[in-house]
Image (cartoon, rainbow, N blue to C red; front, side, top):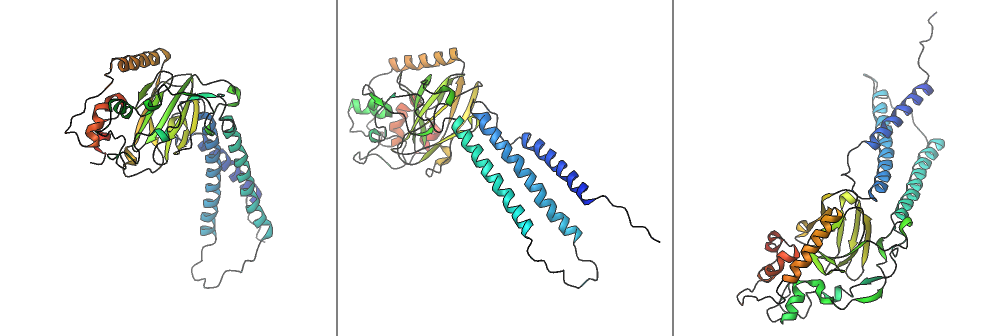
Length: 357
């Protein structure tokens, strides 16, 4: 009499496969290497959330793809077998199972994302309290409809007919409001503010950020310094008050794990603390026009001494600068007009050459 062939119980195989898939997913979720270096206090919060999603996604991928491969091999048509496969009707327990598991995952991730959002200050944008603010950047934009030489798509345009004070204002868009600071203007209501443990404490450094086609302009309201690059000290709380002059832009620093849209007429903010010295790219993450790809800048994280040195050097340069700028009567292009101010604004020749002629 032939004895039945001994096989490994299905339940034991399933348990073993489940343990292997779980361990591999946990390992890969923490070691995928897809994220750039994290250099802000807020970055680990985003990384933990992303790693959890990567762990779940890896497990689901292995289970689904493994099931497909198993079915393809195990239930493949045998040679010479021309019969139909047995009909399969609905399986209610299985349908409940594969509906309930994704629902639990989605609800769990949603709750966790809200927790991360709150820890990053997403619910408390006014953490710095009532701040001083320049009034109405959008309404004081350099380019306006009644300025004949203003061109769509220009970063900055300086009409020849402008007076000396006008020229000074045109060279520095945020000088328009200089000396006209209005108190008691509330912080932007959108964006990430102070973390819960920093609530009620004003930021150590406030920087106004203006997005325009196709550059970022950074103004330090306490000193009046204007730059085309963002300079900040390490370990200090920095608040960016973000505005857009023309169209929707999006301020994104991947290494900080922070991104915030810049909307015309809708001020927003980002508050963060940099944790590592270095030079990191600033990218516009919103398609904002024909030269969107060139709208890039840098955030440079200094030590405190280096930052003070840089700030003082910028203040000294401004003090030495000529208050009025003579423009050649033959300089009829916006790029020629802007060239006189490009160095102070940190705008590169490459950006100038991309302006419409």
